[in-house]
Image 1 (cartoon, rainbow, N blue to C red):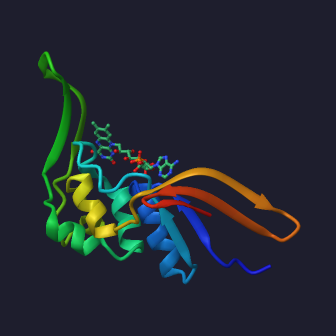
Image 2 (cartoon, protein in one colour):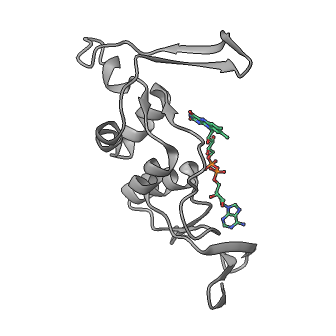
Length: 150
Ligand SMILES: Cc1cc2nc3c(=O)[nH]c(=O)nc-3n(C[C@H](O)[C@H](O)[C@H](O)COP(=O)(O)OP(=O)(O)OC[C@H]3O[C@@H](n4cnc5c(N)ncnc54)[C@H](O)[C@@H]3O)c2cc1C
C-alpha cells in the first residue's frame, strides 16, 4: 500500500526537521504540536557540523547562518568554577577552507528562532494513537481548540 501521509508528533527541532526533509522528498506530512507557540525557553543555540549537514539537506543552512552567527568556539563551565572547562569546541575554520568543512562550521542561533525557520502546527495535543492493520491505516486523536479531532 502506498504511503499516503506521515504524522509527526511534536514540533521540536527533531519533528520540524523531519517534516521538512520528508516534504522535500514529496512525502505528505502533518505535524501536530500540543502547545500554541514556539518554546522560547533558553535551550539549544549551538549547532555543530553534524547538524549543519542536516540543515543543508533540508535547505535551511543558508538562512540559519544568515540569522545566526559563526562563533570561533564555545565552552561550557561549572557555574561556580569559571576556570574549569567541561567541554570546549573550537570553530575557527575559514568559510572558504579548501576541504569544504567551513560551510559546516558550528553556527549559533537560539532554538526558537530556528523553529521559526522550520515552522510547525500548534495547539494540537496528541492524546491517543492507533492503527487498523486490516485497512492499512493509522490514526491519531488530538485535543485542540474547539474540541477533538481524529
Ligand atoms: C539548557 C539546554 C541547552 C541546550 N543546548 C543545546 C545546544 O547548544 N545545541 C544542541 O544541539 N542542543 C542543545 N540542547 C538540547 C536540545 O534542546 C534538545 O536536544 C532538543 O530540543 C530535542 O529536540 P526534540 O525535537 O527531540 O524534542 P523537544 O525539543 O523536547 O520537542 C518535543 C515537542 O513535542 C511536543 N509534544 C510532546 N508530547 C506531545 C503530544 N502528546 N502531542 C503533541 N505534541 C507533543 C512538545 O510540546 C515539544 O514541543 C539543549 C538543551 C537544554 C535543556
